[in-house]
Amino acid sequence: MSESGETVRETGTARVKRGLAEMLRGGVIMDVVTPEQAKIAEDSGAVAVMALERVPADIRRDGGVARMSDPAMIEGIQATVTIPVMAKCRIGHFAEAQVLESLGVDYIDESEVLTPADEANHVDKWAFTTPFVCGATNLGEALRRISEGACMIRSKGEAGTGNIVEAVRHLRTILGEIRRLTVTDEAELFAAAKDHRAPIELVREVAALGELPVPMFCAGGIATPADASLVMQLGAQAVFVGSGIFKSAEPAMMAKAIVEATTHYRDASIVAKVSTNLGKAMPGEEISTLDVKLAERGW
Amino acid sequence: MRAGVLALQGAFRAHSEMLDALGVETVEVRTPEDLSGVEMLFFPGGESTTMTKLVDSSGLRVPLGERIVAGMAVFATCAGLILLAREVLGGRADQEPLALLDVTVRRNAYGRQRESFEAPLTIAGISGGAFPGVFIRAPVLEETGSAVDVLATQGDHPVLVRSGAIWAATFHPELCGDLRLHQRFLDEVGGN
Image (cartoon, rainbow over all chains, first blue to last red; front, side):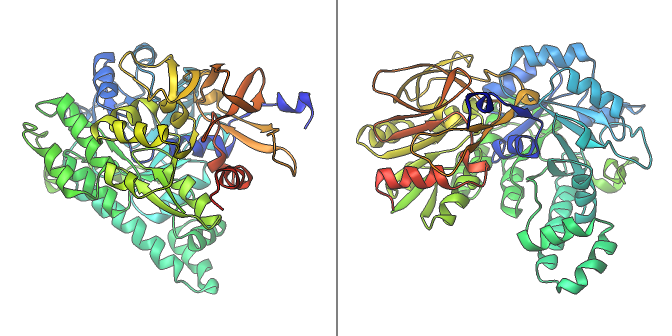
């Protein structure tokens, strides 16, 4: 390789975009609404923060249209912490995504927690240098997002409820559908692709790999260290905690406990130790009592 | 030969997969008991602030220091390198590295994720063409001690160094699908 060849730097490749998701494995990404909360999250061992104006529990309570955060708020958080900063854009709102990229956000979450901007199309994520994470409730949805360029998939769960049941349903659905593909006859993969409404190339890749081609994290309803251990044991590779930290009685303690439980998820004695005397977790909600199910957003 | 992969957080699985492909048995290390069963240790990339806290809360700081000072072979990438460094710039005030590798490293020195990049590297002792360098929110080595050998550079900075049995890279050989660097490390430290 010549001297000049060594100075060539290629940004925005699939490897560097998916690579950052690899770096976040085994970690906890925490929702924060102020620089002070971001500091607490970093102090507690978060691998990244999600900067947003209201946590999902408050979005759910307040109603109305939920949009991208004020850039000043995102920049305030970027100036406060050294870990990656993520932010959310509305489903299909590529102009919000462009703004987030121009701010230097490290990961963009095209999120059902905000009010969708397009009822048919998600953002063309290949057009961006910044990597995207998207939610999914089943394998077909995950593969459609990957085909649009998502570099990380997360379960949707039901954000803002403190109830883990939907995230467990989504994880078990996605992982069960992957397992079935691995034992599906080659000739039956075409029909499987049609059933999943997903590209045949990705269906073949998943059948061969036995997993998604990008990391899969869990989000939606994680409120305790044991919740984190549960979803990690089910097969999530990292966790997002939204309202569960700053809606709990002792956010710093809860944050640190969820970080340790995520690392030592298979060691129940450590999960027990970090769960001791944490104070009240966030109040939860029954899914059947909800007026709006955020997980139904996305196509 | 059993290789440990520090699995507190980060890209530990990618290292394990490379070692599997090279026929090396791997163990995920999260506790001092896990560490006692391995003969070499891979420090993966990830978030160095998080890993530093978990090294302490898991009780690994002292046993890690003892094993490495006693000569255990170590391969560290990105955040793993930051964890081993003598001095960390651009980190948090409470981010106390293990100080086992005589380098000064600056975190996130190229910028944010949109500045993460790939670049071909020429690595001393590795033939068969350029090695794919994957740099993700990568640090920069600003100073290296006199006992530290530089095995590759990118632009003006060292990106792969060796000091005794410690090898450290600011990039991610575990993400590029190219086994040559892991193979070379194993050859030199007597793993294969």
